[in-house]
Amino acid sequence: MRNVLAESVMSVPPSGIRKFFDICATMPDVISLGIGEPDFVTPPAIRRAGMEALERGETHYTSNSGLLELREALSEHLERLYQIQYNPVTEILVTVGVSEALHLALMAILNPGDEVIVPTPCFVSYAPGVVLAGGQPVILSTTAEKGFQVSASDVEKLLTNNTKALLLGYPNNPTGAVMSREKLLEIAKLAEEHDLLVISDEIYDRLVYGVEHTCFASLPGMKERTVLLQGFSKAYAMTGWRLGYAAAPAEILAGMRKIHQYIIMSAPTTAQFAGLEALRSGEADVQRMAAEYDRRRRVVVPGLNKLGLTCPEPKGAFYAFPSIRVTGMTSDEFAESLLGEEQVAVIPGTAFGACGEGHVRISYATSLEKIEQALERMHHFMQRHG
Image (cartoon, rainbow, N blue to C red; front, side):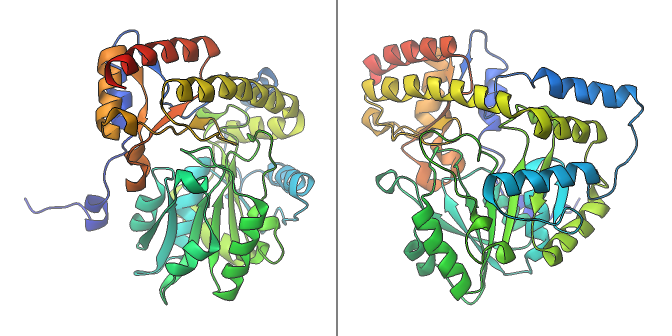
């Protein structure tokens, strides 16, 4: 039988994260520092709102764009946080997680051969998403020495006549880096000069520590050329509800909505009612969970540095990205050996781009007790290998 799979599908690798989850599932007594989701249960009021929606019989499709009441609340939410105004009817689309929002944005703007600059290390779906949408990812490698931040000069070096967009993901998964307002302003100026679109994935915007998050679309002149991706999974501990959204200029959003109509119809109705309650009453829960992540962060980072695994201080999300070069191992070798010898799961840095070699991603979205146990196991491992 001939090869029936599309070349674009064949060209992208399977997720480097999933491999380790599958191994973990077969091993007892594993402490996972690999999974990128909150260990908290969705707060009670949000869960109740979802259940009450079901009891009321809210089991039908919503508008393709999502519940108008939810979009209105999202518009108010973004204006309150970032002083940016989005029309809830024409400029906000509720999606099945941020993953769908990203896919829609790329499909809506890319023609074959269009280039998207993708700073790495980054979330595993960015570059494959560009490929699957028919575009060409252009990789921009960041470094620990520069705080894993992107500079306008770095972007400018990669611009060609085919460059259509820049894909930013800050606060960053996997590094925990947060972009400074100054650097974002320089990138905004470059985007205007070269007529670039910016897709800004800001799913971790509420999880920052000791710094302020700058919403890219809130910068002068940037709302008109930004697709803002957001969601409920991380800040509200709602990963399984699969609820995200995009905010963008009406013309771009109309294109995204058209694709959404054909491939999804609408986001889960129950999740939308839960998300509405999250916006109404969830702020105290967001602050509580963020404070706990910060407490864990202040244990993880010194603990890793004490082991000789040099770790820049993450200022956002719930990840640390230490260097493992002192061991002489590759990222894959380190992760596999640590899992096999001490039953601690971390993710190789190469899962997030080639420049992640020499690092591993460690998630502190797990209990402090497990983190401390994992650090003790890693101490035994480093005694043998460090």
